[in-house]
Length: 170
Length: 411
Image (tube, rainbow over all chains, first blue to last red):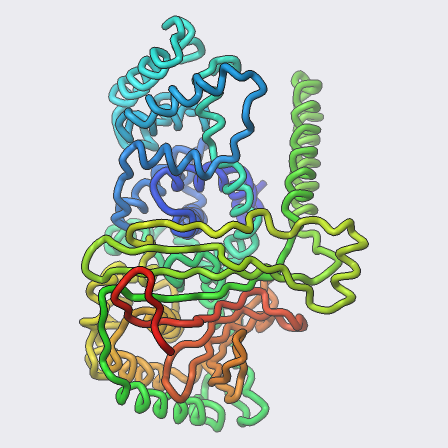
């Protein structure tokens, strides 16, 4: 696949939604879309420099872009309210899950925005701690602290045994 | 990650898939076209250019908060890079060529712009607590969203099943993935058998002093068919829903959105302080251009920034100066008088052309309509050659200052 246009199209098709989803953590939809377009334009210009795993790199570009545009970080309750509004919830068929969900949303809203970001990066994109740290612009150690802190508090809210919480975590 | 982990389930549920899928579908062709028409930075220049210019400057024309407006940009950027071709003269004008800009059509456009400058200069200076705007956006519908999504999910499920079955057969797995991408590609480029548009109206009140305001988006959603035949074909296709969300969305607080992508120094609170003389405004615009990534040719940058400024709260003096500055770059523009906008108001259309998604030159017309009696912006359009319905039409129904969050300017 040496054709740059084909390579770029694949990159776009594969990662557009991820990059936009990340932007939506901070910016209104219209601006998030504009910034996502810009992020991919940067990727096009630097296509030959992209790492093998381009997603953390793309998310890092987006993070800089949000900073340059001086988009303020949302308080996490605002962020959760926004996400609840944006996502098309498919209500679970198990009634008790709904209660748990409300509680967990409340806990999620009480976390710092960076802790929420840590959980989201791991969950939505399946990034490894090193990759997520790159995207979040912090050290892997800091990222791990954020992630574990967030997950433990969520687990408390959902009354889960701790081992369950960390299952699958690298 | 464990699928049965309730925390993961919760977080996964929060992922805004509908929204990202919708945006992906709307923006893909314009984003790809724009990228392909943008020069990639050669290795030997990269260090220099990255160090010198501010990182990641944006150079799109984006009417604030209006995602659709960005569609206008990309092809613009490349209009003269890829073609270098003369922009066709209007029937009323002579033969315009880039080498000889001051022929009939260009001279005429210049005269019209200078007249607009005069009109603008005589408008009174106004002020108020909030800058209000009401914009009607009408876009061509490219897919029936629910059907599209269902097909996409189906293809995705098909691929997942194949991936599970072929996990030990790399060659076949690769082929299955390629097939998936081809099918998704075909789905995305497939055209509907009918022509329809979706319109909605957005209102915003923005304080230029603090972070207060209000916006009400997605009002009066309306699907329209180009002709009765198009409606009939839509009915034959099973009358699929063409708009996913018809409810207005109100948001309190400052409407988000930047004045002009690529011009970081322009802010809502400082825009009224822009110079009011031609030379000073030109110098300011040139300096903003110099600070940017300069990927856009200067003349086009001027046009784009001009369109942004005309939809923003600039003073009559700046507006006058802006028309004078635009009058100096008419070699790239053509004009047409007596053009009606989406509201039926007539004005002067200032146009240029660019290539379409496939790179075919001159296929897309970008048009700005202004009222020559008031020198105010009426509409921004994107029109594809051979199609009677514009791809995008943004009508500035009302703009002006008001003193509270329920007031609208009297026209």
